Image (tube, rainbow, N blue to C red; front, top):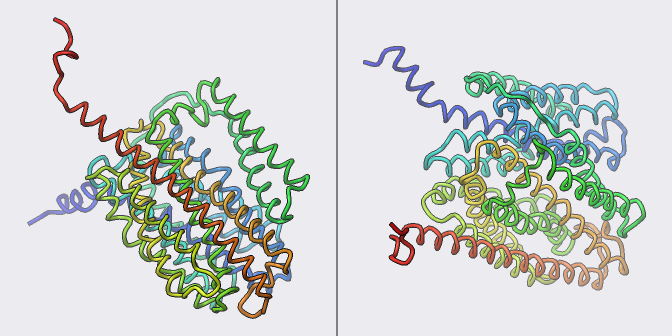
Length: 499
């Protein structure tokens, strides 16, 4: 019969990696749900406060912009100060700022709390993959990293459901208040399982100049892209912001070459797993970003379906991706993960070609089937991508690479959304406004043809990007396999060392 000490050993000590995984998933779930919950609460917020919906968009925009600026900094701080500390800090700040957002009496204070929320969320998201990688050093790592993909995707979908229920039943402030009990429980669990060992004593050197330059580069590029989409032209302010962002990025690279403890250690890009993994993320995520803009417009404006039916048609992506990601992570630990990434990108490429051929009367089932297949492709792609990114990486670089991964995704989404919106807007402008394209409004045939033609052109470009991702992953898989085979061969007489 097992005594109390035996139960403690089995349930707490032996199972500690799984408790850590549970804490990390709470850190993924809270920020991912928050974005969709707040987005669905904006109309009710506008009705209750009298603030125009266009102005309230900054409640969402400020959160994503701050998160993009901070995520790499948070990952680097996790490497320097201890990821457990940063993770616990993220829970505390996110929960406290959520309460502040719920109680905010005016828009400036609400925006301030949203910025603080984003800093807390970035501290969680930036360090989660690094904590998992350092905790699971055996074949379970792929499953754990795949579960990250599931929770991030599932959290967004769950946020819409939970957010709608909360807003209808308790008002818009409830979407913020719900984070308090979750945050308190997560903080307690984080303290118990993540901070069992003191941090090593070493001098703390932080690259403050690099942090400022990174903030200027990311904010300049993101806001400049937003202005470009808003004005539908390269206006003076958009050009100044984009030029300033590029200049700050160039200055950041120059500074990081010289400082002793850089915010962005450039040597990580010499690790081929990192450079290939990040490039593949950008190429794959371009399709996901464009589809988030193009397909809702196509479904509601061209096919004339309602919002609820359009949502159901797009739902299979999240479902299939969530179901498949953990299992593909397990397989990525057993096989060459780059082959799996190539297969996922190839499947996504086939779907983008199909979407380019939809036309004016494409069947609704074809869109839904495409989303199911894209979900399968993403499930096969993202978990192996994480396995490759963190494979063989020194512990001191885990946080910064985790931050780079999130930053790459966010910048890709910003660039592709702005470019896709601009392309469609310019194409339909001679025939009307894009805002006229909805299930309730009739537009001219020329308008519809311009919209569908541009969507087809965008998807063909995306297919080309995915073909590049396939080629990159195949090259990486082939050369890695060849190098491994060469290292396994016995030395030949010509290469044996002389006595």
